Length: 192
Image (cartoon, rainbow, N blue to C red; front, top):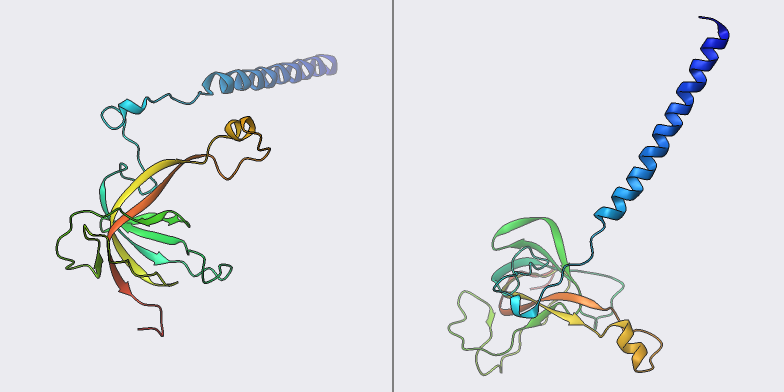
């Protein structure tokens, strides 16, 4: 093959490669735009009959669960701050990755009709008089309760409409764990 033919073939290959690369880039951009989905619309009346909301703990919201974990020992928090609860197991099954329930995500459920506290260290009763124990950092607890959900704060548009220039906190759906019974599994080292 002569040098001119070789260079012509080489130039043709470069142009073909460039054309193919351009096609792939354009096709990828078009495909990415076509696969971009808008959020699904769920009617409130469809929950829970047609739509089930799965919580952070991997179960439908409202399901009775037993969670086990440890209250975090975050040195950046003051003694008055609520420490995160790190969930390690749900219904006796170890989680692949721990789930962290932050401040405001662990609450006592409203009073209900209760029975014997056994085998729990604390259990809520209908009169609601007994306060649950205060958690201590590094303390391991098991709690009986349910994960529930709600919207946090109004939308940024709401705050703007009432004349507040800054959104007040995080907007969106969040979950929390509402407990009815607690069992302390162990205390922090050096405390009993």
